[in-house]
Length: 232
Image (cartoon, rainbow, N blue to C red; front, side, top):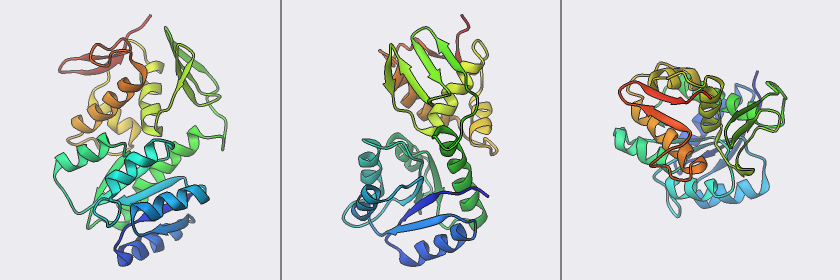
């Protein structure tokens, strides 16, 4: 059973209590906040491994809180919202969220998303050491021992999903992966209508590792096919 500390952030206390029951049944420790400001205060005091964040909240909404959290932390953030428009999902991902689930949600899906994101995050931390290899492409280095990515010796901060995507491409230099292949490998779920989701994460990686993200040196697009890092 996977362990971790989850922060639930929603101004609807009934929803928070419902999510808390399902997550505690999985052996997870739960902290609760009812707006973005409370969430930030808890993050200063507690070690949190994943956040489930509502978007529409008083005082500080979920998107503003996500932006603030991303200034310092790369822990997984799953946005929870009644909004179902694809554009809302993309806005959330652009703000730094790792995943998105809509209300009303299936409790089994909620638990699966939490466990999947936690597993990725824990594998990047110091909880266990595995895959102790260094992947390189010119000045870009991914060190699986320290779980760090650097460019020209400067460490860049990636979220767990961004790290896994970059690791996948670096391990398979020269191979082109479609958006669906990337999504199904990293998210571990069927990749229906996933092109924009993957594109947002690729763009965020490029903004962190490329000198000019619009003319990328590392992650290349093969139009109509997918993404790759060239083989040296």
